[in-house]
Amino acid sequence: MEIDFKKMGGLVPAVIQDDKTNKVLMLGFMNEEALAQTKETGKVTFFSRTKNRLWMKGETSGNTLQVTNILPDCDKDTLLIKARPTGPVCHTGTDTCFDEQNKPDDIMFLKQLQNLIEQRRQEMPEGSYTTTLFLKGVNRMAQKVGEEAVETVIEATNGTEERFVYEAADLMYHLMVLLTSKGLRMEDLCRELMKRHKE
Image 1 (cartoon, rainbow, N blue to C red):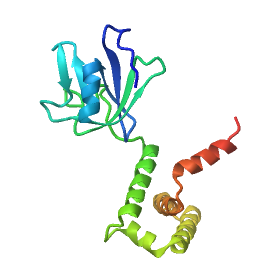
Image 2 (image 1 turned 180 degrees about the horizontal axis):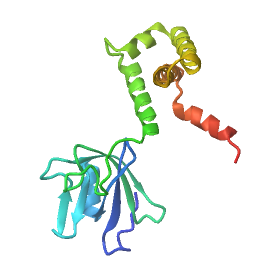
Image 3 (image 1 turned 90 degrees about the vertical axis):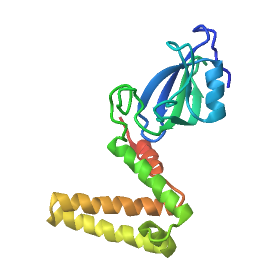
């Protein structure tokens, strides 16, 4: 990775983004040594302009940032670092330095849920309902999607809004399990819908 540290006198801005929620957590600065240490340890390390030294995020609080990916921008003078925080990121105690809660937007939760379903498929833990669905095979999973679709229709036409949402959520979950069993994701459905969309 080639980074232009000369443009800003040896420093580049590093935007820290939560790998799971996509929320921007903070902004810091890195010199070459800070970037090298970040890569070596897997924990975000900045160059502190006020302390005039390397500073690993969380070195006193314990609220470190575990790196998952480092991406340079097109000019090679800014970094986007995707990380997983172990606690509040801001020194004030808030989740982010922009006073936002670090939780996924509602729609982003579907991605997290499918990641968990995929994890269940790989690990097959005992006692998990998702595991039992995978063990029963694609025919049973498809049947469950059909059953949940019928229950959703019944609640839509003759039920309450609360029960309709409940059954629709069941339908979505079972569809995600079926998609996962076929090696597909919700993002594949999104791409298909985007292809159909005409402005």
